[in-house]
Length: 468
Image 1: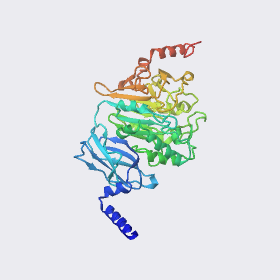
Image 2: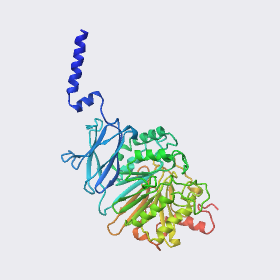
Image 3: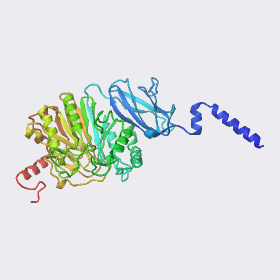
Image 4: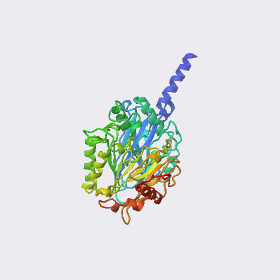
């Protein structure tokens, strides 16, 4: 009897092994994704897909312009290896510009049984058309596991999303802690469908670089740099001889300069002066070269921390004014038009301006969004930026929105949006490319009348917010 049972068991295993490989895998355990997919950098001819597999399998992207995959093609497989925590980045090339593509992931040649429907993304435009770029910072999944703001962002149908740092709050020197926080944030239910369709680019700030207010002395920065490259799908990182997370990316007629404000940063408490740096000399030289090379009508300078003097004495460019002014002087002296800033970090939404028209250049705007999922901090009462254009937003999670158009003349609308997607700080600030040229003062034409009244009261010797 025992022998007959053994023979029947052996026959069952033999029959199981003879089944098609796809059914065999499903019966004994199956290759699949643990995290992702997420769309990374796109160009007019390509898109990039990041994912993390369940084992050391080959991963490939099958893609098509038709939903039924009648014209399907498949990428070359990329091995998910343990040394990279099973994360892969696959660039799909040879595509048509500004075209929607359906895609699905094949792990070890097998479709994921939990993701039976394909995803869809779009290549970047090759010519001028309206472009919508959303951005934000500060996502603390430990406190905010639901993060409804991403539903509002998705409803705005942006072409691109920029993460400006504190994308996770690891606050650790442990690789395990960083990996766990990345995975938790990637699996936030409201975020998952957004990651699968809209291209995502990122830089870091202190909490995903190391600890609070971390600078170049962070002993774990080699590790956090490696993990950042593992979990994001940016087009590049640093240069051959200058590590970091900085890069330049073109999206249609817009050039984006994503800056690394941590890897080379001097301590913020160090006295400011010509030798104090946030970017480091090599990154700063790179930025100047890339600005000179750009022919885009708009150039976004993306920083993890604010460009204005709002946070005086804090962890922002207000503690690195000499270097900030050096950059603004370079833009002026070399007639680099179309530059403005975006930033995060401060747990509120802001629209500020550095009036460089007073120094022979043009006004440099800073649209600030924080946080996507973080407690708010109404500290603006004690702040004093050079020019505050709108009252800061501290009532809900928020994101920044840049809406570019190029029909009659290049222009961009800058706005802070609340957790529902509604405008959070009054009317958008509307800038023309013609406003961002030397000798042009524009801030007075776009400032909110209440903020102008407060500024003028301060200029007369009173208090910005009155009561004196």
